[in-house]
Length: 333
Image (cartoon, rainbow, N blue to C red; front, side, top):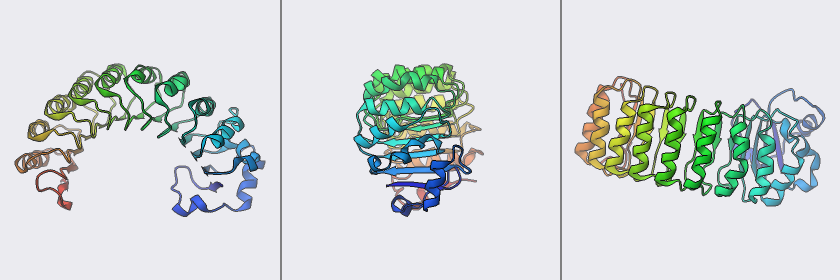
């Protein structure tokens, strides 16, 4: 089934739209007009593309394309994709197709004006990322890149670092749920020292540990002047990693939000962030330290410190000592 909806760019799609065919005139307009009168969203879910070749021929005319298909269907899309059409600005793919098939589709899409590319849960692996790394590095319009849950290891991080160094348009990088480890975090931190455009980094669930947290903390102090959001959820950075990361946050003028949830930072790590807040860090607006084994005294110290920080809007301490209710996420001021 192919669903083409004439809706504003970035608009949400109702759940039932996944199983509802759009009016016939919508498809006819997409097929017959070289330039669409409105921006269209195309969602392709377990479709029988072999029966509908004309629908895939104009794939690149759509502003947003969301693909969730099996191997053969993604291969059909890759063959039908016309790289000369440059209307597509967002492409999201979830598939178990072989890397070679996905590589063809992604490389074609990046030749246009693609701004958002999401390849979550595509089983890329290190070899798969290597096959599209050059295209990613040379993409002139790419603002957001998601490579979450792809089995990437530290062997991929030099490539990711190169993308950060060469792609001046990239604003957000999502690497959640890979296997980068402390060495991978070190490579990315080195790239952040010289990067002047990245605004958001999501590197949760990557096993970076305290050494990886130290690398990121150092990078925050000496580089990445535009980074506003840092997410290191579920990395077991521990108390030592929390201290180094808090020191880095203290030295950053751009950071607005930090998520350190589920990292076993304990009272020692909580104290480091409390000191950070007591120093009246002017930019930080939200801090998530939930599920970290912090005692009631540690939670109280964080709340007192956050209340003194004028810019702080949200402090999340849920899942710590006696903080399992709705009041655990505090809206301040």
